[in-house]
Picture (cartoon, rainbow, N blue to C red):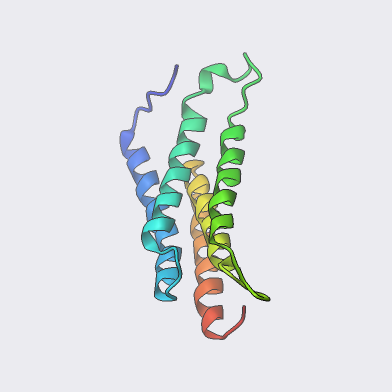
Length: 143
């Protein structure tokens, strides 16, 4: 198995960037007094990044030899996050609460995946756009 990555500093940078970017969105949600905040978003970004790094690095030896597809891990991250998001959505009569938080958690996972795949510009740009959507538009009362 070829999981020995020569530069461990690269892994640390990826993990910290995923935590930082996902955490930015979590800070906005925490300031809005929502159920999931900085720690939750950061952990989701971290976990998604770690699983992505594992899916890319740990299974190189199997590509082309078996039917293993590393992208399956990434698709399962998204499915798993769906279960967490579903637990955050509540119905109160005709009002639905938690949809934006659930969408934000889903996005935090995608940010972690993007960092894990070294798509840094995508992760940073996505974080900036999400922060604008969740913070600025909330202040303008645009739901």
